[in-house]
Image (cartoon, rainbow, N blue to C red; front, side, top):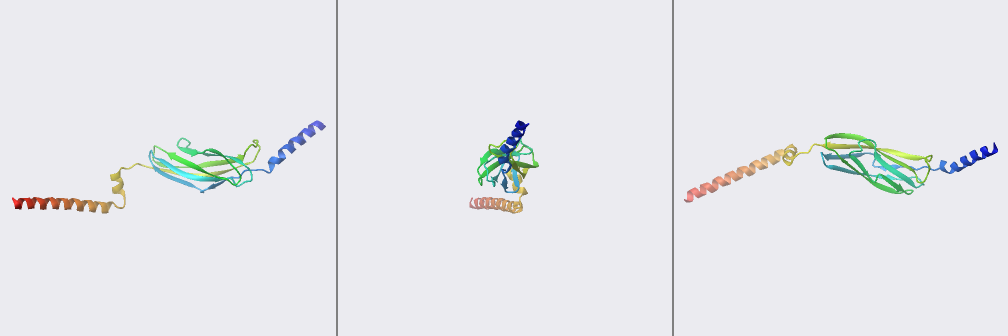
Length: 173
């Protein structure tokens, strides 16, 4: 019985140093918004900061839509107070808006699974618009009426100049 009590006591004592240690996570900005065209890649960045006094192993991953959202790097180590920039890329073949979150988790480096970790959810929206050609984009823009008037004036002046040159040739013959 004394041996069993000693083993339990030593097990509890062995885990006491882990109880006071935890890894925190801080992320900036608070939300990410990406916009692109169908088939084109959108890029955004966010910064992860380790505010705790411990070295932490951090991992970042999209909670959904992993097939077209990529994070680089997805796993990294941060010393106490250190920051790291993470690149987010998104590319889709369909138009629409995708809303999900990026999970950023941190745990104490070298700690067993019983160690305390932290995590943050970073809201992400990816807006994918239809691809338009240059003419369609020009007509749809706010400058379209001005562009139309300028084009009309250029064509009118070209016709007028051609008519004047022809009249001048006729009078000299």
